[in-house]
Picture 1 (cartoon, rainbow, N blue to C red):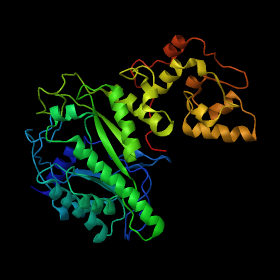
Picture 2: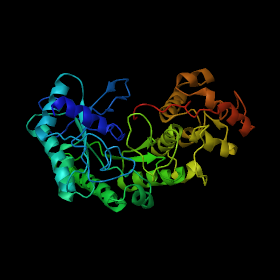
Picture 3: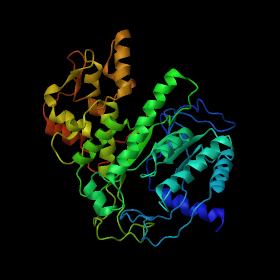
Amino acid sequence: MDLREKLSILASSAKYDASCASSGSGTGEGRKQNFGANLPSGICHSWTGDGRCVSLLKVLYSNVCRFDCAYCVNRASADTERSSFTVDELVDLTCQFYRRNYIEGLFLSSGIFTDPDMVMEKLIAVAKKLRTEAGFGGYIHLKIIPGSGEKLIREAGLWADRLSANIELPTDKSLQTLAPQKSGKVIFGAMEEVSLSTAENEEDRHKIRSTPVFAPAGQSTQLIVGASEEDDRTIIGLSGALYRKFSMRRVYYSAFIPVGVPGREGMSDPRLPDISGPPLVREHRLYQADWLIRFYHFSPGEILEGAPYLDHHVDPKTAWALRHIGRFPVDVLKADYEELLRVPGIGATSARRILEARRLRSLSFDSLRRLGIILKRARYFVTLGGSFIDRPEDPKRIRRLLSDQDGAGLQLPLFDF
């Protein structure tokens, strides 16, 4: 099998892993580099804050796997063509693609084709050779193979910008049902080792600036949505715990693609749910809820407040505001930053702009629009010194006016900020 055929197979096998952004990476500080720019921006066809689209080479080292996870296209029992790269092939491929301006980095994962330590050693060998022999200074994201030793995880962080270990399913019960060879305890152990190593590295670098940087873009993980029976409250609760306990940089949500979808033949398994299509609206709402935890200072419990699922027709921030309509309207001329963050249509950036602008000049509703506020939503929840656009008197009416019947009207930013 030639290299082009390998690339076709192993790139296709990697495309269902969503946890591949690089936001928050450093600039390669402490690493000798001859070529390749490592910028703090999104990777894998993501949009950066200044509008640039950047990409990476996203492949598996091998799609041979001993595990038989029901939801995975590469599971041991799947009838799919198998292949593996060599370390030299991947290093050469990455360098050639970068020099041709096809990519700005590498996202590398693998099937578990042998002992976890041996698989992890192969991934590390690729990253190490890129850094030390090829002089590559671009972005590298390595998957941590759960079950691999602490020393290997620590070494991986010296060559990679970001590390990730996918939890995939929200509970041990679901893992035992759909991925019986995986262990939540082992996966959490890998996450904890990355978190501890990061903290130790930061402490060492405060004392000795020449200390090599460890995984400067932090760690991420992925949850599959809809393959198991857990509700949104369980998923959001787990995400909040991951951010809190392991200083997770991102939790990604991947809508389960059911049996029969083109390109996923051979996926039939009685353990999987029988649904007509991937729950994309649910995935979208989970990302919005995740945004509230990360940037808007919401706790997981506040977002749902006892309800099992997010509202598919309004975004979770609007849903919260309608449940707490007595806290509105907020006077934009007097509200502090935390109060402004709770207003639908006001983001973290526009809230900071309001605080700065009102110190220098008077504000009008037109000027609020210029500051980035979405008045279509905010109009029901704000006042300017007693002046209203629309009074928040009837939550049912507001919900009806802001309802998004297909669940896709409120788009998330395509970049981290």
